[in-house]
Length: 104
Image 1 (cartoon, one colour):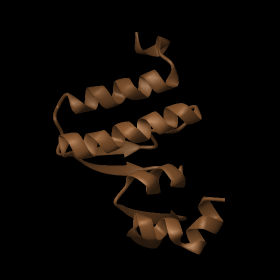
Image 2 (tube, helix red, strand yellow):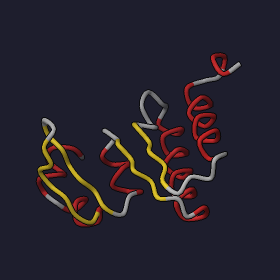
Image 3 (cartoon, helix red, strand yellow):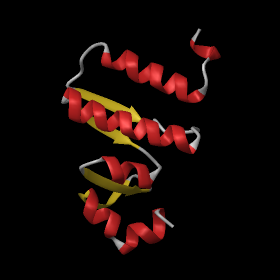
Image 4 (cartoon, helix red, strand yellow):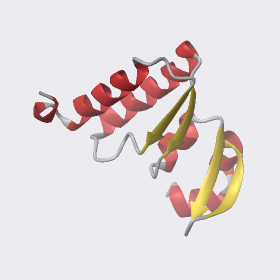
């Protein structure tokens, strides 16, 4: 039963079930929410593998800016429903505004 699994195991189950349909686009809403740091790293690696190995595009919504900017190609930073920054994730990781607000 899925309800007996840990948070990380449940997240992997959700990802596995979503991959069964071989999606071209996978929408992920905060896959790291509530997970232990080691599990967050594991989820990040899985997201990268889905994109690199399966070729699926991924739209990732994530409050963990460090994780999101590490694994994504392009990022959009939103505040109060408005996009305030956008660009290549390497650029956003080096942005003083992003570092100050989200990576400290």
